[in-house]
Length: 142
Image (spheres, rainbow, N blue to C red):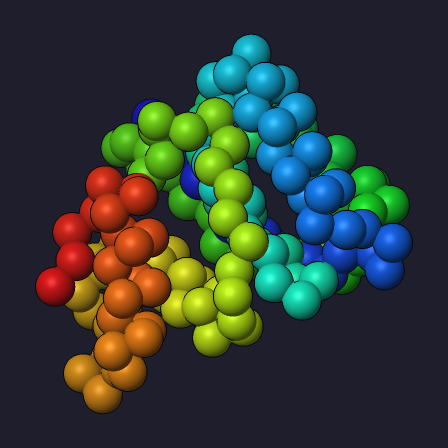
């Protein structure tokens, strides 16, 4: 059984794109030790991260994130127990986003059925972004 936690936060003003790459690199190493996988996304100082793995390890990591001065307004978007992780191949995937619309599209992936998460009137751009995340996560997409 996997525990999945998705949170969002705002990066402190001094955090740069280079800092995000460094965070992702060191997180990848550390997460392997704790059997945690996930994905880190950011755009314009907004952060969204998916953490998956043993519940105690994920909760411990999230507690550390809440105390990290590089974050503010840390908030859980979703948490659940799941049969398997979405991102089992990544100890910490990383992707800077091009727009806030892409970040918002990713939040829709916290539903169990990806097809239901894509509105019929969604733009082609949103469908492309959701499709990219679905492919990376091994999820089914339209």
